[in-house]
Image 1: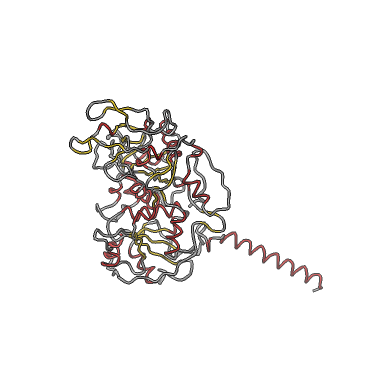
Image 2: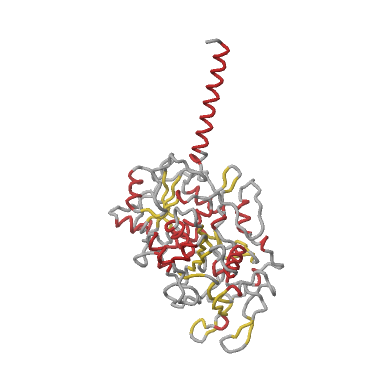
Length: 472
């Protein structure tokens, strides 16, 4: 072969190898070291839903995946449990799953009482910041290849669900977040032993922002301006096929109409100005999502869907029905403080609609604790003594943020008793209200801040529409 032909052959061979390399990159993506697009080689921890059994976890423990120093299939177990009443924790006294790490603050570790949203310069029980998540992630040794298993040492469904939901918001894909069916009790019921040994963890440098990009999944969280837009759309005919799932009004309230919303930031018996049911919502209480009652055993997908079809509207008699349920394109879970709402989010996102690309599941963490403060100062009501008084609203007259017209069975709390003949005290939240109040375009402060966290990527903001997320 001539030297010229040999050179041509070498060039063609190099080109072919280059094309194969490009094809390999295209097929594998950056997923071998990224939560955004996990590698297809990660098969060890793939499951049919986000809910896993003790047998599955035991297999991962026995395979040495828990706190494994490297690899694409490493596992970290987070025991998201509150301290007991005596200040101790069953993690230390009764024991925990081998290798599990304690998040002793429970659901409180994943929420924040200092964040501004909408017309309020501070709102209680909102999603935690990126800095808080980075601290949790790094202390637990979580890296870009970790599958997270969430468990609990008691029967608090809120703790596990709030952790799952917050990891989802901060960009972790559902195929990398698992919840243990039954929690620690489920582990023991599977004839597995607990331990009191504390694992040695090497901190990671991973976080919710890498390479100048923050992966926050704002698509799954409903901000206040977005929620108002959604409810107005439902009132206008619901062409978007949105279903609101109220997880706080359940079987304990047969009429499913009125709750009792205490203020989230003031201790004692201070109430929001009003209660009722957000228009278009259907009641499916979070405690009903597990069976047996008061356990951490979540119902299966078919049962959850059946329960949703049977959920009651605000009149206490009309149900959503299977047809309307199946036509839904978006489910929004909410409650009082975002905690039961996270249970609903997990039941829908992690179980019932885990692999359904046609259904979006969203989480309104503001919930009634935020929504029921949204009353203009001009509203009056009859108190328990029969006098006409201020209803307790603190927003500007004709405020765009006033949600009272978006309530069924609107009930002013000045006309209700706290106990016996003691009238309810309505919280004075004047100091929390911006003056002037922001527009809807400038009222999504939480997600604007979270998108900007350690990010050099400029994203468009404004309006009431969601953005970001990367399909997580």
